Length: 488
Image (cartoon, rainbow, N blue to C red):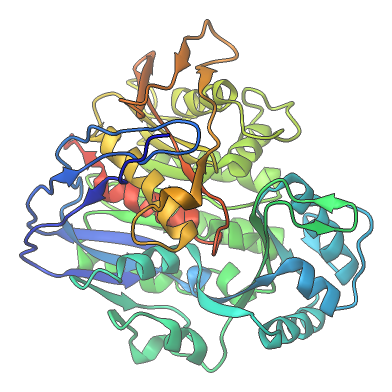
């Protein structure tokens, strides 16, 4: 069995600090930075030793960043064992059923069991405020419960804030506990402080953990909240008024899924206002949209048709990818759920369809040219030719981030990870596919399809993850930092 060190990145001299400002958006400003060389070798696993011959790493956005995050993405995550919380609430295992909205404790236990059985991540809105606050109090007081910064954009910023060369300004509803949890590099203006925190409950489970007749195939989490202020995009106008002053070089959107807790009328109105705001962003500024778990297919369809054409890049996981194609009647839409590791050919077909049908072409007024897909076992970075570079380093950096963050290690410890990705796969289940076998010397696999490039890499999966929430945000953040956008 071979072992190799995980590839590492060493940032060289930074001539300016990176600055962040939160809203739902990640906004980036020019920064002078030397290309960082990598001592890059992919680590080994019990099954296969993967070595990465890394090119010189070029940060595609060598910039000073403002991360703009509204209340949509500013909250406190209460992380604890899902099974133990349900037991503390006196809930016993029973039926397993998906619920688009949680209206009761009964709905909570059924939905948790449903997704635990699949080992799939999910996020739901809990409609009963009084019941939710009682559950949240029980969760926060439970021995072993841990409190973290929460929200997609806040998680991305908090991770990047660990770099001493970064400064972050958080503009959004920040309560006392969230303010206490924020990194010292995160500055919060007085206007953003509020008396109460918004809490999201993160119910985690481990691989092989059992609850009644349910046994989790892998580690994951179930998230729920009663978060009305975040879902209303209350800081949207603050963001819009800030753009002229900040002159961003990159915008990252997230938190649209939180609007599902609003009425259909409010949701549609705020989405239209968000679309208008995005449309006002100069076209030479790249925009990345980070998706999250959703349940309303009509709302997802609206995002596909109204928001996708305005952004340059999206990030999503396997549950979001399948829901997306179901919502828009895309390829493999009849597939009810994934069985085990998502089939690479099926995933590839859907990713190809996203860019072919909703991405940039000579005939279509869309800016979408990049999709970063991540699932537990592997990642795929898909780009329209001519718009993005450095994809090998970008997809590898995201995979490395998944392994280190899940195991809470600075570098990947080969004794704590294993390879779950297929060693052979086909690149499509619709068209004449290519059959690919992983090569230990070149673990980032590339193939091409009608002007669209695919970069695939396996992930070294943590055997006993310390924390599962926020992995997608860490993956997308690393992928963006290593990506290079070509000026048009």
